Amino acid sequence: MEFCDDCGSMMKTEGDVWVCGNCGAEKPRDSANEAHMTSTDAREETEVVDMSEVDDEEIGPTTTVICPECGHDRARYEMKQIRSADESETRFFTCTECGHKWREDDH
Ligand SMILES: [Zn+2]
Ligand SMILES: [Zn+2]
Image (cartoon, rainbow, N blue to C red; front, side, top):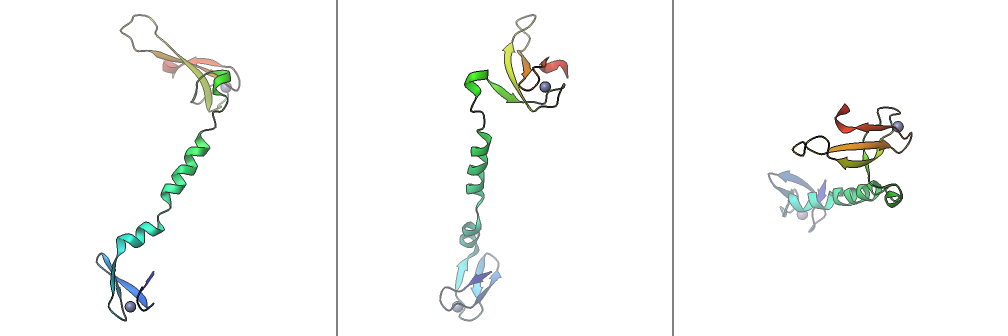
């Protein structure tokens, strides 16, 4: 819902613009849409929440992965190259909750 800047009457949409039913003033709908967009702020808040890995330096790098043993969603990991050099590196996980160890390609 938009109101006319000039006379304060209710405006109606016509294509890409708002048109005042009283005085005929127009303004683009885009500017009105931007004013209602709060997604930028919401995204920033989400990022702050995600930065919960404050104890990284104590326990090493962690990643979000489900422990097959207890279902915990965070584990320490290290990259290791196994067998021949032309095989890709494999991640080894250690559950931060129960200490269970497993290999990425065990799934
Ligand atoms: Zn008007
Ligand atoms: Zn676990």
